[in-house]
Length: 271
Image 1 (cartoon, one colour):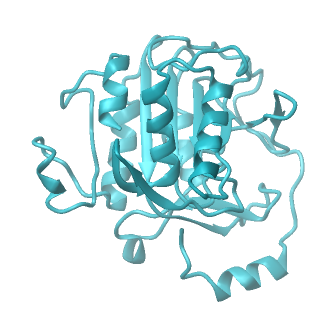
Image 2 (cartoon, helix red, strand yellow; image 1 turned 180 degrees about the horizontal axis):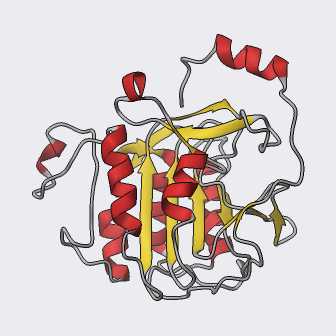
């Protein structure tokens, strides 16, 4: 992934790039101090990413690992679940929920700052809790019933829908890892300047050709013209158009008991 983002102007130094990798001893590829993706380190890394962000800054976040779901106690989610990512020590420290990720890297961003996130894990469709989901058949955005609005320009590419699992894969350009991450790299290697709609469509096509059923998703904090806007890590920042900033409760969903019974029975099956 580093080789893909560097041509977009990302500086390859400790002040601008942080990596958390669970490979040991990192295959001899990384020379700088690389930390393990523990819960503590992931939370610190998210704080590092957004700290001091100013208008005009473009940030990039990638997660390729295990994901799951947990019961939504607040009744905000229509499917009854909070989507989660799993740090390497989740069995002792717990999972990281979409609520926590939104509060850590989405809500703090000021107007004029752009964050692109590539989240490749099971149930990752809305793991950043962004309020707008793109409908490719209609080329339009759909707002969440209970949206979580923010001022920054945040765009998420996810490995699958909330009710799907993401597969592992690799390519000549990418070692073993998430299938969606591999598709993201392959597509941008062939075409570094697709529109956002083209990028997702080409990734979906690549995954189908590889025999994967998962469907990548595109969500955002601000509506934009995904059909015409060119993907870039250099500028192209949309200003805030949300009149209300924060979480908006329009409907409180009741617990779906049959779903949670199944979740408890299979809670050890993570993506």
